[in-house]
Structures are given as structure tokens and as C-alpha cells.
Length: 197
Image 1 (cartoon, helix red, strand yellow):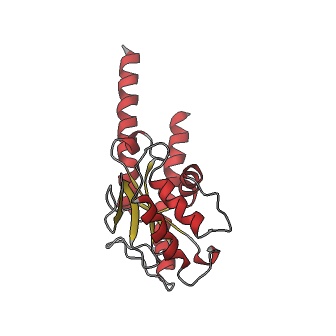
Image 2 (tube, rainbow, N blue to C red):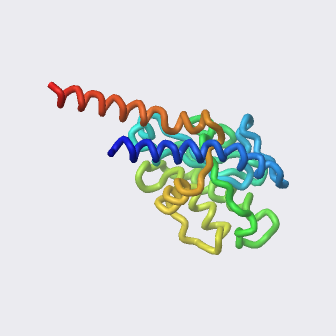
């Protein structure tokens, strides 16, 4: 019975990966061009796993926000916002946001908000639990009043990113889930072996 649940979970994840190519083509047919090779994701929130931490908890990872041209900015450590070089490697997932939901005034409201949030976080100490990469992205969304809201936070972003993000490729799917699946397999094997003795 537990294996049946696990199998259906894996099948649903695989279906999401298969649909990623179709989503990618649809995304690229618009004005903004996404370039996975160069890690360009216009108007997107991007996510990548953190070694060890994401192996244990695959829903926890590192987040960044992209400019209108797709350049990633992420709060990578104390007093440092990385640009075009994500702290833990290339994104494995992206969540495309709707630029029409930006309520701040001005033609460059998206980029202005991303820039202002990044400038603010260049003066902040990184705190894994309270003020981190998710908080940086939340500040950018609050500044632009995305979706007419100024209540974006790290918990909301973590949950919504988990729901709406798409894998950039099958390799991105493997990088996200394979360590966790292998670790789970080892734990189950050891547990069964000890119980059979």
C-alpha cells in the first residue's frame, strides 16, 4: 500500500516533467524569451536545491527573482546579492509570473522593484530561518505590489512556488528529487534489513 502511494506520486511528478517541454515552447512563443542554457527566465521566480538540506527536505531550496531580461538576482549570503550566478547552481524550476499583475506605477516597475529589493538586501545579514533568499524575493513582490498584495512572505512563496513551479528539464527534475529518493531507498532498505533479523 505505501509503495502504491509512492508510485502514484512519482508518476504525477513524471507527468509534470513531460509537460515541461510543452510549457517551455508556449513560454518561448511570447515576447519574453527564456533561455535555459544561459539561465535567463524573464519575469520568473527561480528555484534550485541546496545540497544536503534539499536532499532531506526536497521542498526547501534556494530562490531568486529574475529581471525583465531574465537575469537572476538572489540573496546568496550575508550582505551579498548575486547577479547572473545563482548561489547553488542553475535553476531546476521556474515560476513564471504575470507582469500585468504588477500594480506599482511606471513602465519599469518590475525591474525597479527587483533592483530596490536587491540593494536593500546588500545591507542585510543572512538568516536561514527569518531573513533569507525567499524574503528577498518577497520584498521585490511587495515593492511592486504584485497581484495587488503587499503581504508576500517566505512561507507564502515557498508554498506557492511548490504548487506553480515547472521543471526546466528532466535533468532539473533529477537534480531536485534523485538524492531524496536514493536516501529514502537507503533508509527503507536498512530498516527492512534490521526488521527481518
